[in-house]
Image 1 (cartoon, rainbow, N blue to C red):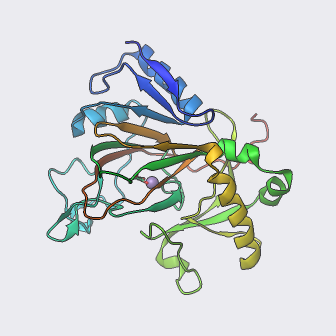
Image 2 (image 1 turned 120 degrees about the horizontal axis):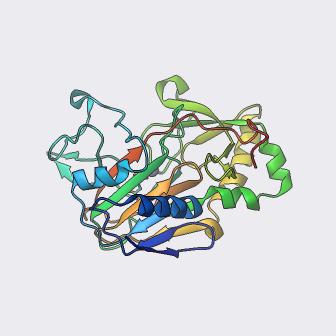
Length: 294
Ligand code: OGA
Ligand code: MN
């Protein structure tokens, strides 16, 4: 099977053309896709028709499929529309049934974040397939955190070298948690290196984001806020971004270690429906953990 790779920007994102990913892919094609993913971090496949099993089969070529964190149906707080897909598929949607969203991350804007950076072993990759989209908005923006790191001035590189950051999340999409009033023990959280080493490219990547990164270890709250603000500005710089405008039938997959993503606002009364799978990951490697790597 042959396909072509069309970079979206110099630093992140490529469209793959010529493949029907609902069908099994041969080894050579998979190797070529792996290569493209390593180079571009975000891959876009347009005009795909994927049922849950076909999407799962495609995702499974990339690794071990991640389980939803609330694995038991009885623990799920939301209405679940349709069959239970072995607790690995997830809907990202604002559609409501009996008043409850049928999926996660329902409405509106979502600030830049790395999925699950608040967990010890964040997902390696996420795969979003669009089934219904609003008339405008609800775009997903991706930022290359390798490019962001490369653009940091020495002053900032030195300020974060060897340091950890507190990552935390509790379902707020466009606001940070207020750690003055909230006990950190009551939310999902983890201390993570501020710079990680990417397992395949060996490159450094900045590992902070506006939504989930809350406190730099060893700094006062004021110093920490000032440093994080500067880092967010580098991470969100349009020069390191690819902004995806969805069409129905898009499958977008992203590297969750060297990219972060955000969603723009969209009309609350219009339907948006995405099906999401993940590939599970391992604890992240700090950039300074393995000095022998590139
Ligand atoms: C996600 C996510 C953004 C979107 O699924 O992890 O952040 O555009 N989605 O819905
Ligand atoms: Mn996300």
